[in-house]
Structure formats: C-alpha cells, structure tokens
Image (cartoon, one colour):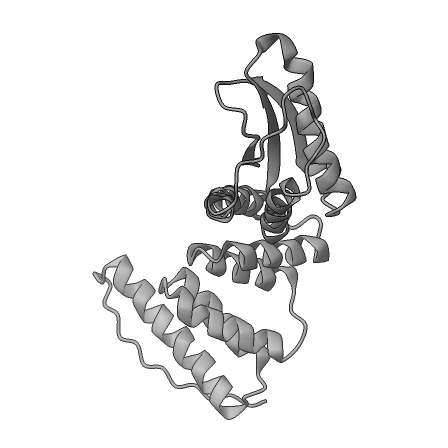
Amino acid sequence: CVCVCVCVCVCVCVCARAHVRACVCVCVCVHARACSQLNPQHRDAFRDRADLRQFRLDDCEAALGDYEQAFALGRLDSDTRNNYGEALQKLSRLAEAHAAFEAAAAADHDHPRASENLVAARAALSQQQASKAKAALESALRDLPPLNFKPNKHDLDVNDTRTLVAVSQVMQQYPLVSVRVVGVTVNPSKMGLAHKRAESCTSYLVSKKHVDRSRVIAEGRHGDQMATIFEPFV
C-alpha cells in the first residue's frame, strides 16, 4: 500500500529527552494510524502501533486491540506473540498470557524472552490457581458431610464419593493444581491405617474420576479429628 504521513516536529536542542521520546511516539502513532486508515488490511501497522502503545505509552488495553487486529490479518512472528503475552500479563490476564508465551516459544525455541516469560507466567498462574482452588474447594465441601472412615476401616462408603466428586471437579477446573489427600487417625500407632485411607481416596480420584495420578499425593497423619483433609498445592 502507499502510505503518506506528514509529521511536523520542532525540537530545540535543549528539549528534554522525555519530550523527544513523546514527539517520536506521536510520529509513529500518526504513521501507523495513517497506514491503517489507508489500508485496513495493513497488518504491520497494527502490530507497530500495538508495540508503541504498550512499551512507550503504557496503554496495554489499547495495545491488545491492535495486536488482536494484527493477528486477524495473518500469521505473526514469535516477537509479536511474546509482546502480546507481555501486555496480557501486565493486565493480570495470566491464563491468556501463558498461552501467548507458549505459542511464541513453540514458534521459536531460541527466542530470548519467550521461554523466560513462559516459565514466569506458569509460576504466577500456578500460584493464582492454587489460591482460587483452595477457595473453590472450601466452598464445594462446605455443604457436604466430612469424609470420615469407620473405626479401623479404610474402605470408602457410598456417601464419601460425593466429597471426592467435588474434589475432582475443582481439580478439573484448575489443571495446574495438585491435591494432597490426608488420611487421619486419632491413634498415633495406626499411621499405616491413616495412609491406607488416603490411598483409598486417591484410587477413587484416579480410577473413577480420571485425575492424573501425578497430581495427587496420599499422606497419613495423626490428628484429633477423623475427617479426611484435602490440601491444594502447586
């Protein structure tokens, strides 16, 4: 396309550096805007304006709109995908940022920032999911009876499965979160029984609700209460 952009910038030698940067930002923004108006299919104009809005003007919301318009106009390089992820991360949209960094790293394994950003985004997303999963699990179990085993038994009762179904639903909702299942006994000499109780719950989650075994840890614990404990972690 043919783009005509007329920018008049008058800067004296004593102009502050911040003013020079602002002048350059205005020029680039005017240029990108002119290109997109002359040709709405000008993908690179949207990409350039998105980068400007994010890194120079600190306007990530506006930048996202331009990135998404650029994506709609065709395949973009790993740099743009990474920059899109950074804008999303700044807005605390961690799941979307993680997906963007994942796409950038997959497109270019040697990208200088995408891999590092992916690791950081995964850690932040995991912590966020763990916090939400804990609240969701507490809410889901609040209206259900405690999962108590009969004295000296480790077999699940039919009613116990309601609790485990609720646990599996939370784990499905937060795929980066694992759960520690704690079987409890009031008798410290029966820790083996406590562990078997935890294993009974774990076996149900894995075999019946198809939870990945690597996401569940069974543990026996001595305590004053008999109720089985479910602890989300990352």
